[in-house]
Length: 426
Image 1 (cartoon, helix red, strand yellow):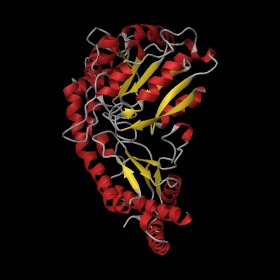
Image 2 (image 1 turned 120 degrees about the horizontal axis):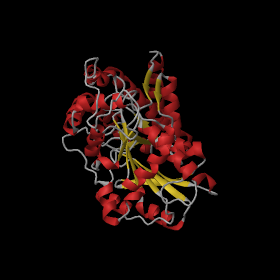
Image 3 (image 1 turned 60 degrees about the vertical axis):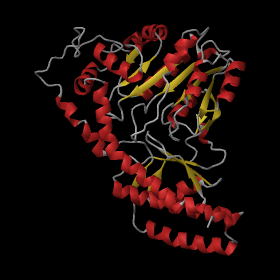
Image 4 (image 1 turned 90 degrees about the vertical axis):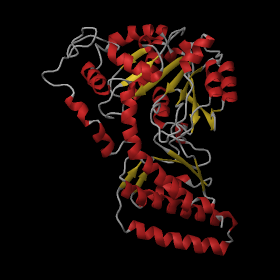
């Protein structure tokens, strides 16, 4: 029976049963965490042999003759550029291989724009009266934090099944030259797991912004993070932009953070050759070079893009059962009651759950009180303001299966309890 169809007496009885079960969970003294999309320890074990690839007898010279232990190679060693160019579908000349985190490359890209502008800027963004970014939501909280850090005004763009609302995007960028950027997670988006449709990608490539220095921040974090035998496909944004002559409009980012080691992976940025040239001039003042030893280690270990894909199959074998457990539990516990909606993603690292309006904060609070930490309610929206207080991001990858089972059952119980409280209050 749907919770919304229960009368007051039935709701009160349901709530009392939930409260009893909830107190039993609290008595367990749980300390579980599903707040961040972190690989589990067994995933980190997959690439441990990488640490033995380079040793005291290894040839530590890149293919262009650079001694990777020394200075030089600002934008990356050639073989690393080739590896990531194949992964992202661009040329090596359109690649900058960075440090261990794509977040750092994204932050630096915004910082450079603020202090120096980007290719096509008349002045640094910090000298403008206002800078605005479009922010598809639910979205990635760290993108929004970057904007807040620089005082960039955020405009929420609703997410649809095909990606962000392109009608709204096209209108805003065409009318307002203070709109300088948009954050995108185009494949298995964080947190909904939606992959942008071909039409959406083409509409991005055909944008006609009023701001000549508008940039699409294309955070392709999950481009190889598939969970099924029938993975989603994503149209290549650079291919489409080259057709429209607008390849300067895109900055693309990715990393091996959830492929090798989150704390010691390799991050990469793709951009047009003209953008790369402008960025490299400023980058050369900030850095001598990134960690070329780590770049070489990754290339020698993976060898090529096929090597990366093979390792991702090992990751899939570990995390796909975790996603299945969560989705099966949601379907069993919440679907019959009509108190939640969610996507069944084909990849990525998250499951996005929408509760009844006005319940998300209460659910997160109940879970925390019983020992399960979730991503904060509202975190998936700019300024942490979910207007309907309903979206919760679940990160299933980090806990082992036995702990995940406890955590997701408690989560469902908290959704039931919060929903009953909400309906009784009405």
